[in-house]
Image 1: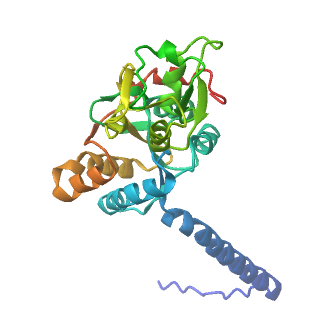
Image 2: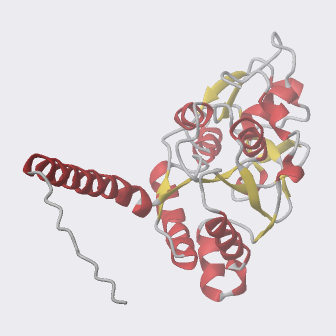
Image 3: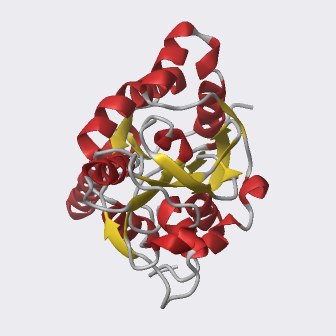
Length: 285
């Protein structure tokens, strides 16, 4: 028995054919636009923020080679983001931290963890203190002697300013604050006689042997590197390894020295938990 199949040719109406062609062209166009929109985002450089520890131009010279080295090690483009002063830095930070990575103080690092869901991945070895210093001809034995005197300091949320308020907790018995854009400017204001004293990080004060030490504050964890929740886990792991490995090569050691940094070690959110309390009273906290 032989079965014969007959194929039937279906003719698509011309109107439907034109409609299908139009749909195909529309889908292709939308796909192209979507790819065009996504491509820049995929290739966009991660923004690595550095607070104004130093004058902006000096900071860019000091930290740009380090960020470039990390970019090469991690395999993703990175660009440095600096700020003219702490007021500009805090405004950007408190309104959402529009960058991806930050090297920051303990209070602000913990602030990002608590308020913006960032994560700490590394820190500089050890702890850091702040030093209240006076000029070479000014002998002060107790901070209370500086009430109503001029003290140079970076604005909040610099750790220098935050700890200064702890030294002078009474609002009617405080020094006259003279805000400077960097710790270096604060130190030089003392040496020039513009102010009576300054409070600056102890490692920076050590670079000015002519200054007289009044007191040193309680130590807190040193600078931390934290990352936005938008950074892919694979990049986070690679960045953490690159940071910790920096001091293992002569080239990496030279970069750390140029940036005035110690070696990095692995760190986590728990090590900085509670440090953001120093920000209490800061506008926008």
